[in-house]
Image (cartoon, rainbow, N blue to C red; front, side, top):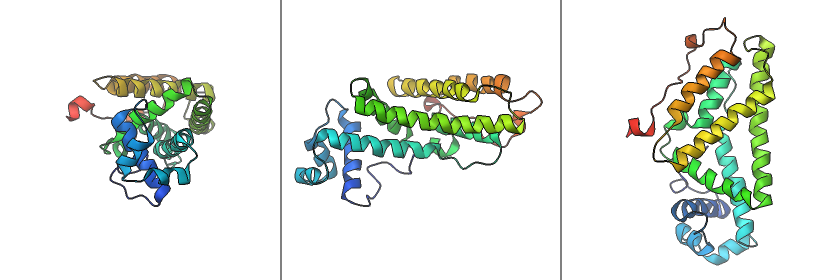
Length: 225
């Protein structure tokens, strides 16, 4: 995800300003309370500005879904180190928001909440369901490639790469849902068991994961407060 909150970044153009205003309004009022008027108030924009760029509220929100998916997806754009073990840990830590870079962003949990709020619309709206299906498949493909590279290099067990990627990302999805809908942060427990799974089922026994330099420890929200 990109640096900075939606409210403190300078938009590049009017369309991006509308996206930031939609983000702020969604965070403030929730999807059920979202309206063009409230979005306009958040961005100090006129309602006519919206209709110059979008046909209606549904068109705006579908465009905002694309915008949010792109923002969220940047957190997965981890430059490969060429080492599948490091890439696997970095990818999953970015996904959970526990990577040192991700967790230093004060709005990371807020962004995850907006992500969940939008994704919940896929239950009733086929257009949203299609967008989030495509996005999830992209993440599965990226993680599958990392696992497949590890198998090819002989550092991972001969697991089913795609099924393993789906399992890990489904676990991440559950952790994000818990994080944004509970009063506590269960990610430390989730990560502890994910790390255990990686060590016992994915990484080959002869490799010592502890020798790697990456930081796979993090504080919970309660600890950091």
